[in-house]
Image (cartoon, rainbow, N blue to C red; front, side, top):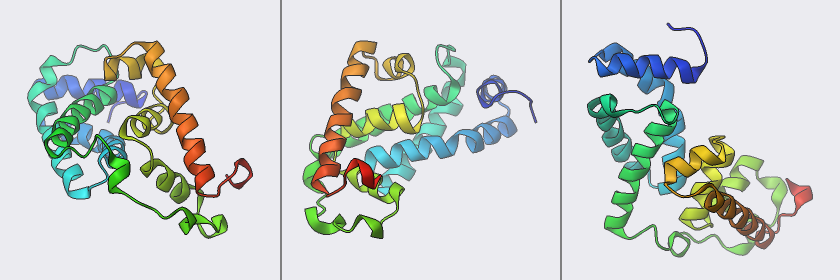
Length: 186
């Protein structure tokens, strides 16, 4: 196994994948699968669709490894591929326009905050956000991407990323408030 940061290791593995190294591809898959799957689950929220997108994503990684230009980390590049496939899939079914309309949690269902652990509470709140808000919060806070990385991934200016984060955080605060959760509860 390689030594160095996970980003360095992923880059070395991808260089081997370019040469057709199946073992390196398997290691790259194992290294990145969790983050990519988590991103997709928050974006799509349908496990069957997530699994299909993951399969397509890693086929695209295998076939397109030579196209990696090194402008972002390997994981960011793979998430970008997954995002493009997911958006195409969501467009087919028109779910991404108003995901809020497809998932309802009664406002009083989380009234007793002590019954829920923090991750469950945050996940429930995130599911009530629009797809754009959920995606931007996921990339910045859960995947810990910096604004320039998110900007490159979404192909929008850094200022747009900042604006989206601001409004997404506001929307999350509102949703949590509607769920009866205050700052002191988190």
